[in-house]
Length: 421
Image (tube, rainbow, N blue to C red):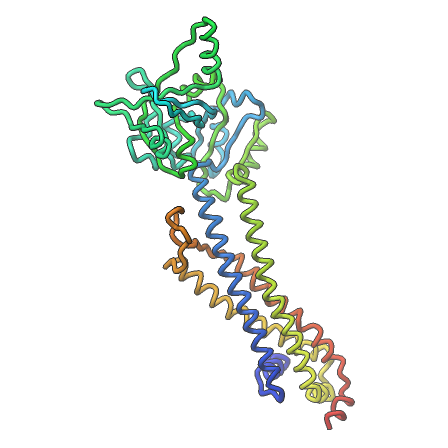
């Protein structure tokens, strides 16, 4: 074993003439452990919230979306879907039409609602969104039956407007009025005849998030094209990937294959401001909690400097025996690293233990959990975070040993031995 490591370990763990040095060193190790443990726990919780929100939104949003650069939309959705499906990792592609319309129940109820209407291909949409799987009351049936198209609405919206899925004995029907329809109705007051709005059978109710449920309805793509009078144009094409993390790679491949009139956006781009804020919060928390390790490393400077003063005669003897200044500096640098490693390992054990307990048993519940989809703080442990925290903690502790090591290396052997003698 390297003699420098043996000496550093002996200086760090041996008996002290001044017990205050051992006390300060212990505080330094505890400070590093506390900082590392706090970072591991907080970063794991921040990751848990990030991935929970991401998975919740991706269940609604596509992994990749191709939209037209102009207001007209996309005129050739089938060819775009073929190009996308030829790429590795793309599992499904579905065209969609989206716009706002006024939803009015057939019974003439005074409660109407402006909703976001999404026209989708019902057969292909099951592979793009979780809405199909979350349609539990009725079925995700948008086909035209008995001369009337189908509509699927959110549970919250149905509750507000007292809507029920159509059955053989009862009819749950609504009318959708787009902006052109409302203009036509306005002109009817001037004596110009306007065609009556199309009635849709409510075929099913889906349950996702309240804010989404009460503002979205689904109809067939062709019905949406008639409603918004877009002709053969659609709003875009939505893709589902085998691996969510490959969205950027697929975006680059599509951008290279498609010409300028098209724009490709990923799930991250669709909610970029939200995801950016969550990442900023994570790194802000890392910086604030990292100050605990910085303060602990300042204590290391003090404790190692006191060890240098206490071991001044020993250092002089080592120098007289032929140990170089460089090796003396390394001895005290190793002490800083040893303090950092001890504190970091202890902090990782404590932090990972708390994080795993929270992950499996939900020891700390969310305040007001009845208003959330989860009962306890979510936890997701990332190996990259552990490596970053560990490297930063050990690096700061090693840096804290620079000044004491330089001071120890500058000790003159003759003066040190004579002074102590």
